[in-house]
Amino acid sequence: MRRQKRREPYTIAIDNLSHEGRGVGRHNGKTVFVRGALPGEQVVARTVKRRGRFDEAIALEVIEASPSRITPHCPHAEVCGGCSLQHLGADDQIAHKESVLFELLQHQAGLEPEQRLLPLRGPEWAYRRKARLGVKYVEKKGGALVGFREKAAPYIADIAACAVLIPQVGEQLLALRELINGLSIPNRIPQIEVAAGDDSVALVFRHLEALTPADIDRLNDFQDRSGIDVYLQPGGEDSVHPLDEATGRLSYRVDGVDIAFSPTDFTQVNAEINREMINRVSAALDLTADDKVLDLFAGLGNFSLPLARAAGHVHGIEGSEDLVTRARENAAANSIDNASFACANLADSAEVAKIDMRGVTKLLLDPPRTGAEVIVDELDLGDVERIVYVSCNPVTLARDTKTLVVKHGFRLGAAGVMDMFPQTSHVESIAIFDRD
Image (tube, rainbow, N blue to C red; front, side, top):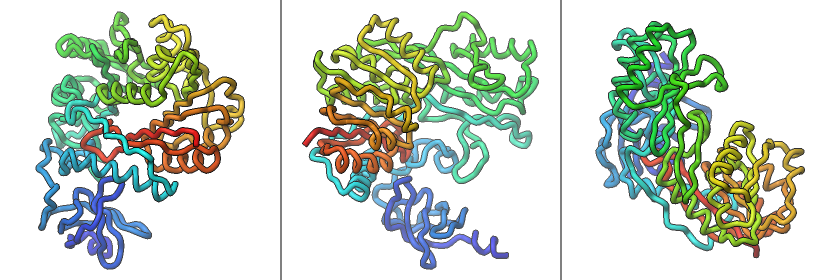
């Protein structure tokens, strides 16, 4: 009885937009985060989750719309969880992401950058080169569903196409459903990983049971017809292998450097923003042949290798042995002999303490969402002249900014957003630190 009452729709006025892109209002004296609502709106909402200090809800109907509201480009936007801000115009999305970054810097670190950088913007649609698609066999819906999970639900959204994925994949979802339905184990394919380079696209099919020869024939036929490279993953990540042994590695080109990668390697999802981001990082570091750059969380050399063109030496440190191997191979393939790479756990104080900082003049940080807390707490930054911090989480960026300024004596010279994930609330940003 209590649960039924809690789920009854109610009208709520929306006052603000949360960092995650949800409308914020109050109902019966309690804060409510309403998915799909915008500031200034009155909506009919239904609570989907009750927590101690706040509730979570979804907008069922907009009674009074915000001037910023637009009609979503994608017919699946209200259901599919792949996007969260399609109902907000592109300029307003950017303004929201900037407000999130600068409010957090002010609130967490008490700082305003000396310069607000112009946002980096690229294509708003068909940009996403990297994704993990869920697969679920649902007999009542005609077999396999392929896509992202629904908003506020664990189910795979029933979608025919995806407008943010690159078209080679986003327009193939129905073909993928048909392909999986024709396999002998359609209910044992839990996910498909998407990865694309400049000239080729790969799909990694996770399968929980062995495929039959007929299954392999079907996959080969799909590969031939679609031009997409098919990979199989019968176990852990180390089990990934191409269907065709002659399949070459994926690659992309940035600043005259060809970077090869495997389909399960971490790469940036937005190729155009990645290129612009590398240019911005390079310009911010203002490198000369006398500079020694330390690139922490270096991955497969996305920043290190282009930066080595201008620096005296670049040393990249990364937590994954596979990515370190890939970075070294990429350096050799591009005849870059002034870049070196090593593997270390950058969240471990003991390993961070072993990093040789002698001669390091410039530091690049590109950490995961958890940020670079151990680095900024433990590393000796006494001789570093400038730090460029690329962040995928403004909360941890603001936290680390405070440490860099208060503990190490840097000043926040500039900061800005980079729209790596249009149509979502994800905030990618950059901050530049100089000595006082």
